Image: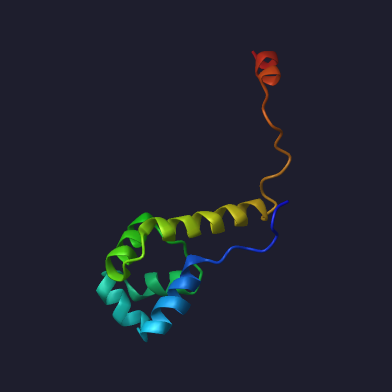
Length: 102
């Protein structure tokens, strides 16, 4: 049974559990991460995905493994695709279908 609740976007964790708890501004954090304020703001406000590069920057700055950020992002990305309605009507490919196509 699939859960219809969306997973938490990694930007929400960054915003609520790190920046707010440490009383850090987006501007100062962006400077420390060596990214633009706009780029960090888009992630924190859940409008952009966390890239592998951003995940490594966050790991270096806060000690939270890059894999944690990317796993959260992956779950969010997959959930969005599955619930977008854009991917439907695709049938499982079986050996029988492949042999009939050749």
